[in-house]
Length: 184
Image (tube, rainbow, N blue to C red; front, side, top):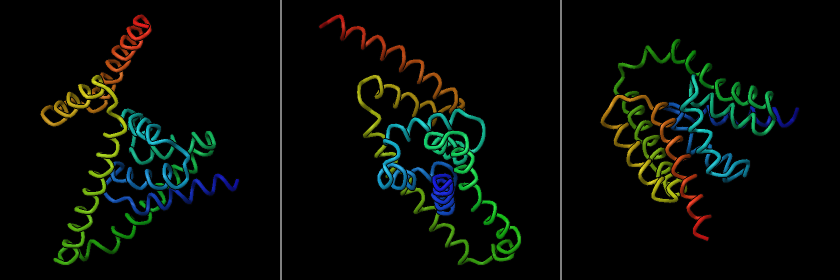
């Protein structure tokens, strides 16, 4: 039971300091789950994010559920998901009742602009780190560039892009592995 409450507490803290959606929690998870606790490798965290992107629902809830499940099965997933949503429920309730009266104040708007800028910087740093660890061969480079271009210049669903990239990666990676075996 102690491990379940630890999962709840960790994801409560993650949820408390995640502003801007599921992607913004990535740097926090990288520090807390990968670097500090060493529960996952960066590659596993990236895999969970990919699965979360393809799964229905909120990315933050999905990724916390996957991580919790990896540690303590179903109850771990439930406790982690509850932990990550608790701060949002509390904060949104407070905002709905109090902050709406202050949105016209210029200082409040400046504070939110500062938060958005800091979150954007943290996301970019994490993306650079993910890039360094994910792009391991020419297949990954092509998939990276193709996915980026398609995401920026079309309205194709990210789920479709991830699924097609998975299939292409599987097919080309398998072919490359077979070729290496033949060449030996």
